[in-house]
Length: 214
Image (tube, rainbow, N blue to C red; front, side, top):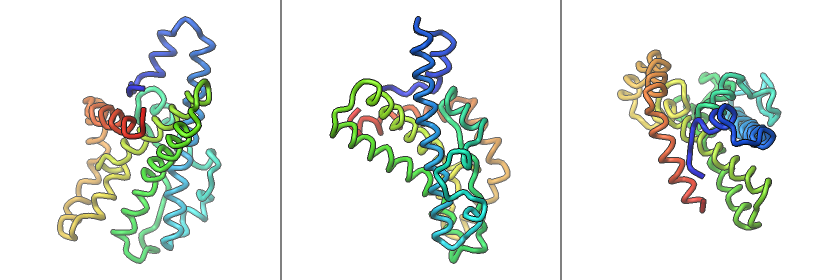
């Protein structure tokens, strides 16, 4: 299954001659996305609480209930453009024993959970030789978990990768890195509309799917 960030948009606009089939695939992708985003944001909240910050817990974010985690625009964009996000999980560095390190761990938890889920689903897929609708759904779930992980690991604020990189930098470089945060959204938009994110996500996803046996 090759990565096509506009797969769903093309499917619905151009059609395949079977409207019902198109809608069905769209719904399968939507369900896969709901699961992927919910697990991603839940993991941020869970790890933040484990590291001593109860902010997300007090907001009811330590749950797999999608209603607590979905961002409508982020979900729609992931469906039609190949990138997206969930509702950000807030955390307060003042509660963390080592704010710089722990912030990186909290940020890494989301993408790591998606990669872990993709690996587990691929094992189930190959172990049981899944085919048909179930096999299609599992493949879509694997693909979109990887897309979510890859996109969020791009080291640009406000994505998770920005804080992950900051956690790895020595203090002097960390201070300089943080100065880039106010420009992050503009940089991210430039990368998206310049096609750079697609060039990063596409080959990385294909490589990841091959490693998982697809």
